[in-house]
Amino acid sequence: MKNLQADVVIIGTGPAGLAASVEASEAGLKVIAFEKQNVSGGAANMGMGPLGIGTRHQQDQMVDIDVEKAFKMFMEYTHWRVDANMVKKYFEASAGTIAWLEDLGVEFAGAYKYFPKSEATWHIVAVNGGIGRNGGAIMNKAMLDKAQENGAEFFYETPAKKILRDAEGKICGVDAVDKDGEEIHVDCKVVIVATGGAGDSPEYMKERMGYTFGKDLFNIVIPGLKGEGIKMAIAAGAATTEMTVEKIYILPNSDMGVQSVPVVFMQPNLLVNVQGKRFINEEMMQNTTFTGNAIQIQKGAIGFSIIDSNIIKTYKKKGLDVVNFVHHVSDIDDFEQACQDIVNDPANPDVVIADTLEELAEKCGIEDVDQFLETVEEYNDMCESQDTLFYKPSKYMKPIKKGPFYAGLFRPSGYGTLGGIKINENCEVLDDDWNVIPGFYAAGTDTCTIYGDSYMFLLPGNTMGYCVNTGRFAGQGAAEYCEED
Ligand SMILES: Cc1cc2nc3c(=O)[nH]c(=O)nc-3n(C[C@H](O)[C@H](O)[C@H](O)COP(=O)(O)OP(=O)(O)OC[C@H]3O[C@@H](n4cnc5c(N)ncnc54)[C@H](O)[C@@H]3O)c2cc1C
Image (cartoon, rainbow, N blue to C red; front, side):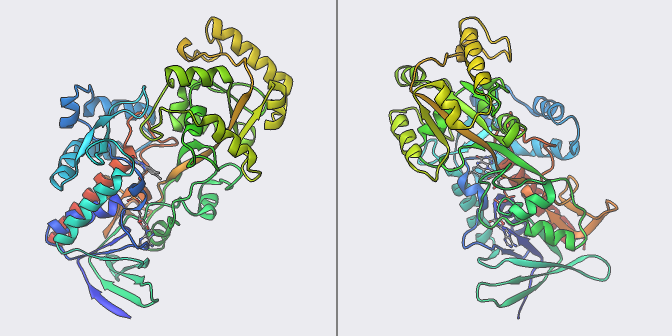
């Protein structure tokens, strides 16, 4: 057993843990951070950037958003079922946090929307001077470098196992185990939990939210996120909160493959359920939360995106209806071949191709083929007038007429879990009586219950924004606590 001393122990080094490590080390505290993987950054290494409201980028780009507008929008969206003080504090801090990251050397390409109806709050980290994927990793590296420069120590492949409190109930230590199996005990005054939720634990998701993996939730795998921080916090006396999934929808086997496939099937064309009926204004398909929710509640949790050969031809000639930065594709020349490759793979049921609509419905497993044919007929009629069912704008109404026909089989998935540990707006962990547990802080998705039942994609960059900002609050809180102690 190795015995160490620190002021602050941070468990998990995604954006929340890293931001906390910078703040606490900047205040002169001795910081030890435990990370179970061999690298820091967590899920955010795959992401593009955090939310900011009222930043210099938005001023430069003449984006009309401020804290008041964002706050009102957010609270209406969540029906005030969330911690209003945390939302206000996070939004108010967010512009300063973008500037703080810039001071650490992070460059932003600007403030962007995620889809046309969202606000331009997504501050995309510049990759080689422009927009690219995985800018989150650059942001994480900048925070890691600063914390290490300040003397913070990072232990990799060293999962924390237990949080300890003394006889008065104050935090007094953390136990961890290194990659050789040696136990490490740290005496400390503060612990900050930031382990990123349970996106890699079908069992915990089943226990906490009732999802059956592979049946009503698919492919939410972010390696290593097993809910350990949440479980450790609860074992140490923390109250727990409702957990949700940051919902998206995907082609479970093909989403990370040839990008033109998900991109074309995510265009706002006809989307039907297994009963052959429309169930959404497909204009919403760029809002992954709304569409993920809508697919989730259909029979069998499945939605079929239907495309005909004329639509493909139009997209090739005139461009897609909607593009976004995540699936950053405009050239779809490989679409038909990529679909054929998927169809040829017996292990991959994500795409169906057929010469007739009847055959397409049968191959998809649509239960009511007559209803499906009626839906297509009505839809095609409405393409000549207007969508009287769900009011989709006419510009997105393209008839389904010419074979071969293509169907993409969408399933609900998630970017991760949200919530688990109860905190106040200072990121102090609360017990079941809502008392602050002295020295106990938590941040990031382990604590993120500010969205209610559905993640808020209308203000994009929201999870990473919440994680960096709450990480900062926790680190600052740790510094104040240690000074008072
Ligand atoms: C593909 C993808 C793209 C995304 N893009 C964006 C985006 O552009 N903008 C946005 O706002 N959000 C985005 N998100 C969401 C965002 O990245 C996450 O919400 C965010 O990374 C969560 O941060 P966190 O610090 O709470 O946890 P994480 O980033 O998940 O980090 C938690 C860390 O804790 C470690 N850990 C777990 N258990 C232990 C333990 N017992 N001991 C020690 N360490 C432990 C993990 O290994 C991990 O490194 C994206 C997510 C995904 C999957």
